[in-house]
Length: 142
Ligand SMILES: [Zn+2]
Image (cartoon, rainbow, N blue to C red):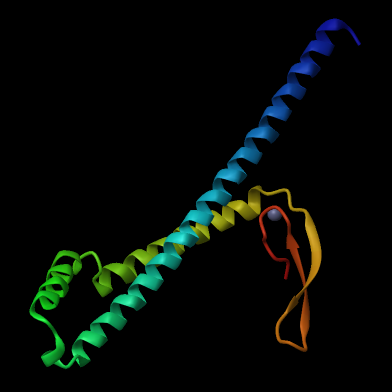
């Protein structure tokens, strides 16, 4: 192999390793984004349920026990955050995040060079099920 040919090969190999490296970075970024999206979704769903619970408690409250200053705090709190916490807005944001999450997960599945492992998960105290999942992206094989 002459020198020029060798240099060209070396250059190509460097390019390939760069591509592999950046793909790995992309995967890490997507995995992190997916994680963040999951956290936001979990937080939003929990907050949504908590707000409904508080509203129900307020509705059922015996007003004789609702102190004036407490009533103000609650009223101000809801008037300041009611738009942000509205049912419609929350459900729209959750739907949007779920769509985004599906897109991210689709990209992760196509980008990851999967490393499959077999494991057992407990589905009930007596029963466990065999699963096959990727240790890098946690995609499960069906
Ligand atoms: Zn994977």
